[in-house]
Image 1 (cartoon, rainbow, N blue to C red):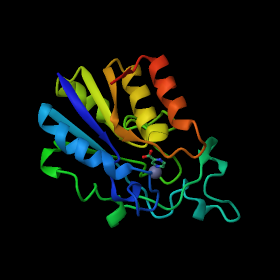
Image 2: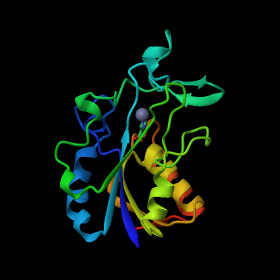
Image 3: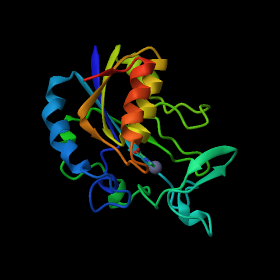
Image 4: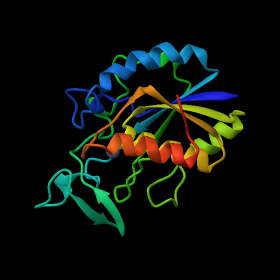
Length: 198
Ligand code: VGL
Ligand code: ZN
């Protein structure tokens, strides 16, 4: 059985949001159109405490986009985004929530970011998504959402690593592109790892 995985379709990643992905709003109608074609639809939700250490605001003197070390891991610093309970953290206003069967929250640990929908960035803590999908009898995943070069990429790479037959739906995906070429590089990396590109 194949499931649709919607990555971080949240207000803060849409134009006008705290960590706006250019063209991010264009993928919401794509998600709404595709959802009815799947027996199971799962959405991930970036869900940070207000003092999350991926926020540049927690590192005096450091700027958004800089890379630092947090708890021994390399960490890109972001604007405050997807703070638990805020409107920016909510699933996108235009998303058909009735079509979403299950929501997985990630990034709640202050000291460890979680780009992937499956594991924290230290690879030690699972979100439960893998077990949930197995329990539901899922063997294949179509992945789309925001952002190509971060959460979509790491989720797709982990999906392949866990043995799911994984396809990236490019039409439903947009990236942050901190540096130009990041999205193309992310797609190449996914391809090399065995992700199908559709
Ligand atoms: C994301 C940066 C920080 C994403 C989440 O959804 O790709 N990127 N938090
Ligand atoms: Zn985040």
